[in-house]
Length: 428
Image (cartoon, rainbow, N blue to C red; front, side, top):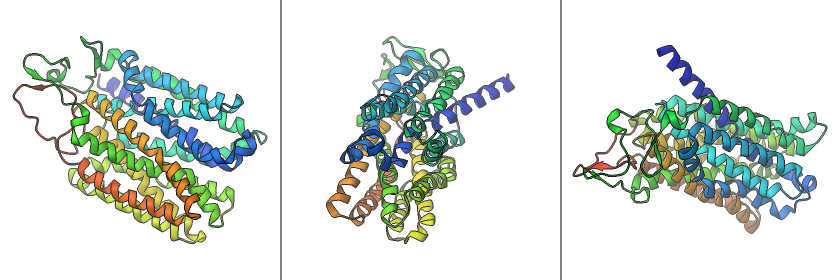
């Protein structure tokens, strides 16, 4: 039984890793070819900032879809459906005339539907910080592959940009097939409730496997909107995502203005993601140590601010180093944001709810990143103002991290009447 359980857990982890890899190329392939899109698709150049913001806007409005699908299909099947929708979006947006913008929005919605369920599957399978780290590293690896391979793919496919962009539908289909076979399903991780919803119990004790409908001896759960920790985690996730998408949308354009060739700028954008892979793996692992977490959560924001200023002032021949350092601290911030959803939630159902809230509202905030950075660049006529504004936002990220690791863990489960919920130590 032990070997079978270990093999099953390994299968779920491999499936989650492949899912995670698929949740960024749809965005970074567009960012890496931004300069080719007006000629390749007849797109008005003034629409490019909107194109960069569309996936993030989709993230914000589609976050509730993941938990809704999971309650009806189970988490594994819900993620598989999301990846199949991503496959359709990737193909249609480049093959159907005029569908680039709506297809990019649909791709973003599909990505978010799958993304919010990743922490829930990790929590339901009692995944450690390594699980979260492998998933967040998958996000970074997918981003790097999308940015770094789109140009070689275009050359290999006879110079066709649409085919190079559509090729990423293939790994999305593979991810859907794998998570459908190995991911948690409704019969494995949830119990139907009297209100038609489900409750995950793959990692809960028998005493926790109770209906969420409060009885005579239970108090109604506190709504997420009234839990300070939930708002702090949401703010942390939103600020780090806003910084990430602002940088990935405009870094290549900024580097060209510093004297780099477009191909070199695209390569540095890929390096930004590659350099962050170890940090995205290790950040959730280190976050499992409470003493480290209390320093890491606010400290990362300050390091991101320093990294942004470093990229701004560094000469062209030092950008490889500075872009790599910025990629490390920003990827660590994303890894920590995902880890906080798992660490600061009481059980799988709460992790799913907190994931939907933090990623939904967080990405709605993040959509301002590409738009605001582009606006500040046009308004100021340079890059000093946008980068200083992003550095100031990184200080707010530090403040959000400070509050996210303090206070009670987030729970949407009913509490026993008359019993005051105690704070849950970070890292547990």
